[in-house]
Image (cartoon, rainbow, N blue to C red; front, side):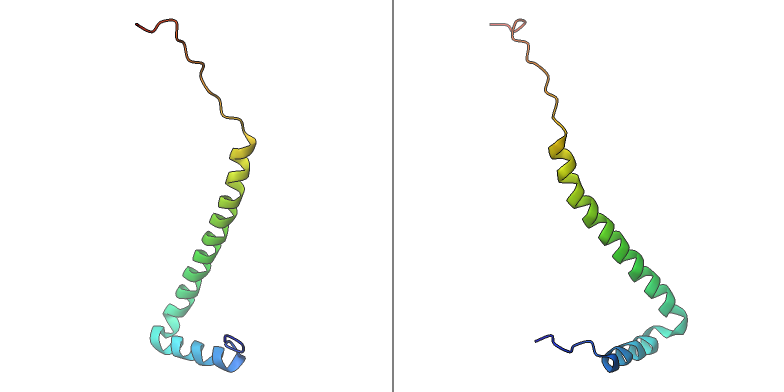
Length: 72
């Protein structure tokens, strides 16, 4: 279904339409913003996959319950 979706001619047409819509001055800013978003997503995914391994490896400290001072 998605075979051959992004052929070079298709990418050129998409780039041309983006150039018409956003203009030559905004296009680099748009690309930079998209790149930063992708990098943030990748780092967030990496942190999310590393975090469960770290929490599983560290033991959880529990305080002993003192029952001697409880009123009856």
